[in-house]
Amino acid sequence: LEKYHSLYPDIRIEMANSYSSQMLSLVKEGKADLAFVNMPLQDEELVIEPCFEINDVFVCGPDFEIKDSYSWEEVSDLPLILLEKNSSSRHFVEKSFNERNISLDPQIEVAVHDLLIRFASIHLGISCVVEEFSKESLEKGIIQKMNLTKPLSPRHIGCAYLKHNPLSLPAQAFLKLIHQS
Image (tube, rainbow, N blue to C red; front, side, top):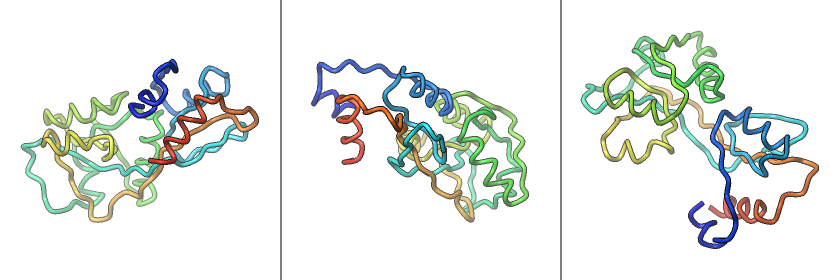
């Protein structure tokens, strides 16, 4: 966004932040040119192309004594803080655990990623966060990563837009910058 704004300072940018499903609805309704969503997703009306890879990791507060690694079963037994059930990130994590016949029963459910970091940092439990979105908090020691014996599979953030409508020139320019990164 910073680079786009410096290249095109006169372009008005409107942003919304919500669940992937709601963002896709905005694109379909013509209220947004592009939506960045958690993949995998499919929709006949949309092109959804991967933009960058992300990794989900479990984190705890700075004073939590961590081991070298944790089994998936051990993590599931800890007091968990997860995103709400209707988020695609939560679906991904639960599906990954369910494939190993492990269920997750969080003590706290939140609507936004920032609260996952905040709540873990004050020792309310163990949060599952996107590592790339939590980099600053990890580097500053606000939270610490808990390594799994076998990490969760990587996934992608994708960009969605209408399949049969041409993108506006500003949206094309933004998408071009995303692909160059």
